[in-house]
Length: 322
Ligand SMILES: Cc1cc2nc3c(=O)[nH]c(=O)nc-3n(C[C@H](O)[C@H](O)[C@H](O)COP(=O)(O)OP(=O)(O)OC[C@H]3O[C@@H](n4cnc5c(N)ncnc54)[C@H](O)[C@@H]3O)c2cc1C
Image: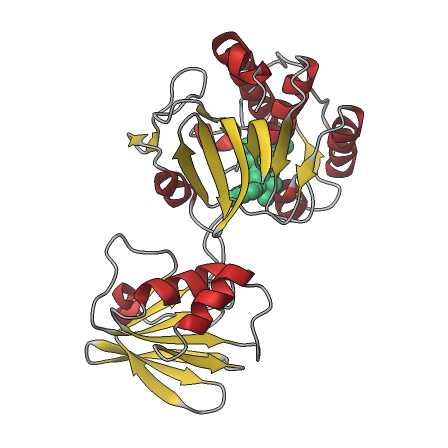
């Protein structure tokens, strides 16, 4: 587990700018955790090739206030610019690390990826943008069963029901373990074996192998409504009925992601102060996730403002050794 002064979640424009601002202020013990395999994954994914990246985006005509800036240029040139920031400021980024939990331990926050504690830090800056959403299957979900099919964990877990969990990652494994013993649990995964689950979760699954029915190497073809239940039709022709289905295919809505961490909302936006600090002391939100309508320059500027605040308010923690 890394021991950091500041952990940044998300390597988009906001997260990279926060790291640049911290490094400029000589705060070295920092790192970014990024869920995809490259920085600026939203821009790579959603901007068409050669797209013009405008400084004046949707009427948000603002000037750069901090170290990071850009001029209207192509997507490719913009990505090169961010790459230069990362290299020039020697920013440490841990890729393929999706943060989905935050726990307070005395003075620190522990950042978790599944059940793995990946870092502990005094200060957390969340810069995850708004474009994440739960992944859904390609086949349709009939309206009649929409209240029985879940893509994120509901607030109340089922009790004494026959449930199907779909997925082969840590979220699927953890949910299967949580529900085993209280429900009749089935776990369906399209591959013949698990390869994305961490060792701890594999051991937990092994312990419960008599309480969970594994459908490995199975793919679902369709879902159909049945009276007070969902009929699942598998590719191999098998049919089985469940009262609820939980898809654990990755991703989350920004709100669910923040609420799971304990961040409060007010009028459909995260309840943060003018510097981005949330109800969780020393947990800051910057970039798109902090506002109704963002832009790249807004992301850069919010990183500048937040880092300035962090340095003014929490300087002693930033230089304090572990
Ligand atoms: C099609 C399109 C065109 C646009 N054009 C412009 C334009 O011309 N000019 C402009 O100024 N703005 C434009 N925008 C808006 C701009 O892209 C956003 O305002 C900007 O990207 C916000 O930066 P961000 O860092 O807050 O979030 P993002 O760019 O969304 O970056 C968030 C990063 O966090 C990562 N992440 C998410 N969840 C996790 C997690 N749980 N753990 C670890 N990492 C995580 C993501 O993979 C991503 O890399 C456009 C947006 C779209 C969709």
